[in-house]
Image 1 (cartoon, rainbow, N blue to C red):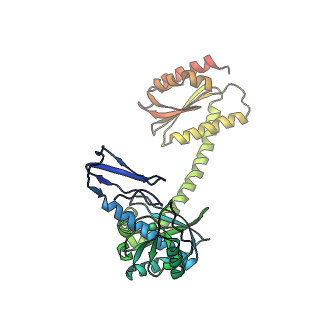
Image 2: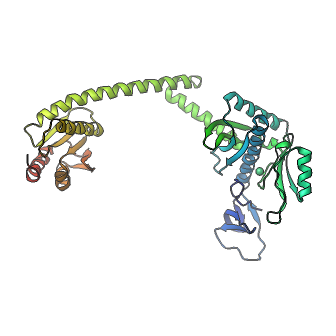
Image 3: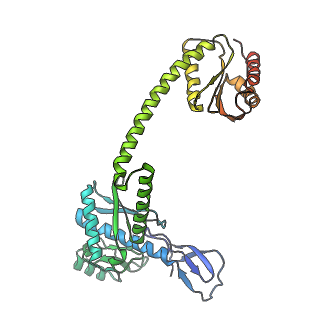
Length: 379
Ligand SMILES: [Zn+2]
């Protein structure tokens, strides 16, 4: 039998005869649809095989979610709000409860309590309650509340109970392990306050063991990248991050100072020229040069140079260029100018890109740019 998606648990997959089944869903009328990659002869007898690895993982995560839910209720009176489980085994499971938030120590205590119950091999029992009386008797016996009554439409009530936590039993139609020992372990990965309540992230079973293996690998890789022992990873990373931020701030200051100097020079040089080329013999990036062009334009506007502007071509030893010109010139002639020096690139307002052939042919391009400025603008 393949489990149809429902109650938060993803669909089973598997085989129906020779057909691959990728999705199963149940309609309100109780019909179960299987999505198959090829037709199956009606009324024929077929062998149905479930993808057990996937199903068992989902059973482990789903059963663990009941354990998380019941323990949070038991230890912190946190009512269930919602939960989320996907079939991606690299993903964590999340459960949201009505609570303002737990401390790290409280989360660790939740962790410990759950794993104690796993060690104690507590039973995880699914019960079917057929009548209203059976539900009432169950609630009386266990002290739990809010178990839905059976109905003609939905059929009997199915509940999942964890030995020792019967008081928090809830109705559920999903698939579960029969004993908590099958979970091997549950690991709470963290908690966060969201607009829906308090969200606890966790994993269980093989998913938890795989996660641990990946984390150990990552830690070893980070240590190698930082050139330190695994024990030193956290202080070393924090130090590197701090230094990086300080360097970035210092670099930003230097770039701003450099922009100031070059803006002055360009504005001065542009006084007599309609079109100006300046080559930076340094590792100036396209972004840095584009910022410089913006400052150049701002400065000229501020000084009230009320002509139709200047054209500016900036290049750098990094092999990048920025071409700025009045919109009418850029639109009609920008491509021809860039093509003349073998550049590649585009953009709006300014063109920027890479110099494919160095600056050897830039004078040719400047002749086109100057002619275009003379034709299209008055200055
Ligand atoms: Zn369940």
